[in-house]
Image (cartoon, rainbow, N blue to C red):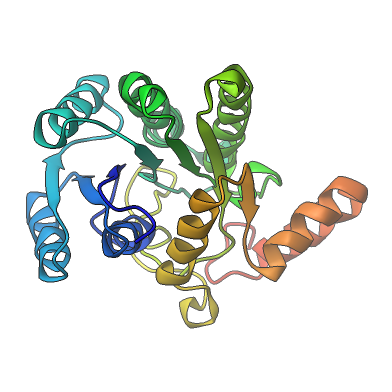
Length: 270
């Protein structure tokens, strides 16, 4: 078992990629600490983990709140004695033109996606450094290529990528592994929960989720990349192509990306 007796914290792990990572690492022998903002969803995820014989603890926490992240780290250490791996997964998206977007929505996305990763990493760093462990940021292709009507989400992912790249370099001589994982489109509830211009949830995905990579596939890639201590992974053929083309033909990609986003159901460009 690749991660036997390792202690893994996963933020926002009551569904999607987070829950899939909890199951994947747990099945490889890890003890798992998961967080979520709903006690009901947290309890449901814990039952799933425990049904697989995984030692797991749930922490009711909002990733946007510094004190919640501190309590999360303290709980992991009090329950399991250490922290080996932190997976910064908690995140939220948005979909609205910037000119229409309530600035508080922009702040909320930054607070959850970016500041949540900063807070969690800050309070887990000492134990992870002692154990020469791993810090993982679940970013996005949007961390390399901005998309229209996703300004806040894109900004949060660019910020995450820069933060973790800088941190990786700081920790170079301390044998701490820092991985940035950038999934392409993944079948999860992130688009359903995406915030509209006024902060209300979108309610339904504008894309065909059936054609996307599953959270379980993403989790397996993250598990393997952590085991091999890779610095970054970009997932899906479409995602890899977008990153490559944006490096070499960014002007053309502006038009390509605009046209793709404009084709979405109920696109704000129409």
